[in-house]
Length: 117
Image (cartoon, rainbow, N blue to C red; front, side, top):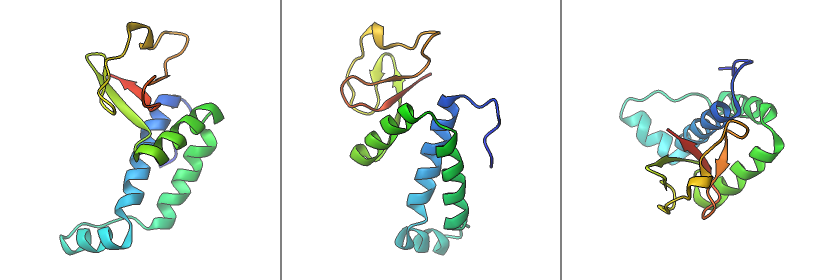
């Protein structure tokens, strides 16, 4: 589960988002319900170690953006469809689109990191 050396910041942030969602499912009450349904969950220590590796590989600037949005909204990364932030549903200006110099951007309204697809 180690991120590849060539993993981009965007890929690392998306993987971090997934790891945080898995951590939420490992909570005792949620884990008990999922196990009752027959799902197998990873150990919390394994997930935390992987999360720590991802955090160490991220640029501090993007980590702060991610953690601020994560604590505020429960998700630090959100997708964009037809120039609309799927976190706050605000239409983004064309200047918010990522450029070759800066592939990552944040929503001017909610502050989440935007994943343009």
